[in-house]
Length: 325
Ligand SMILES: [Ca+2]
Ligand SMILES: [Ca+2]
Image (cartoon, rainbow, N blue to C red):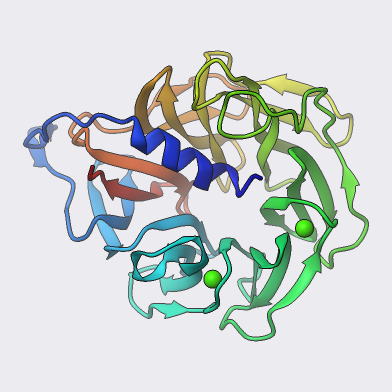
């Protein structure tokens, strides 16, 4: 049974990561920079010009599935409340300055992958409360939690742009109206759903629509020779169905997010071969200028799990973890 790409991948990748000793920070333009530490998990902001990093919110409990409202005012994320099991994973929100924490779900099932509606008034999310994983929606204050879509199978990995929601169903990419209607399959990878030796089935995960809704990027598990899985990032033209590989380097990578201008992508390289990385990378929307943007002064045991652009594209907001064995 799959849970979701990120949860499954995190466990396997983190278990094999061997952290090196912390370095003492670094120098950028003569300034000494360090990563601030509060708790094991945190929401951080990396300034793309100065390379400075700030902690916005931190918690001893695991944080995952970060998303930011279009106006940059609020985060939604999921949190393993109390440090417990999968069923303790709940959706929470904080303001962009880290204040105003509020837990929006509280039950005995997995609740993950919150995504803001375009106006910030609602949150789509995934829940296991009815047995398999379904797409739900709720008000920004947690009220009126209701099912939006259930295929009867594994529905996951949501993205919400304008009146469209992209998602995965059984390791293939689907698209539907934000009201949950008109669902249609838009990728058809021939090995989708087939289990190999990796931590997920072959197939397509984490679709992200560009702001113009003309392109969807996602990661495709194409090779199971590494337990982390070899994922390449693919761009799909929504109109023509044409697929273009943006990467071709055999890394374990994905979870791309678009810049608000639609010209760049930020994503995570989780592993290269058997070696855990958890670095942030950036490339242009055509795959050019692909490079690691993780500052050299980040300690090896500080892991970057998910990155996204700030509302003005000047910074990357990401989930940081201080790795502990
Ligand atoms: Ca829950
Ligand atoms: Ca379902």
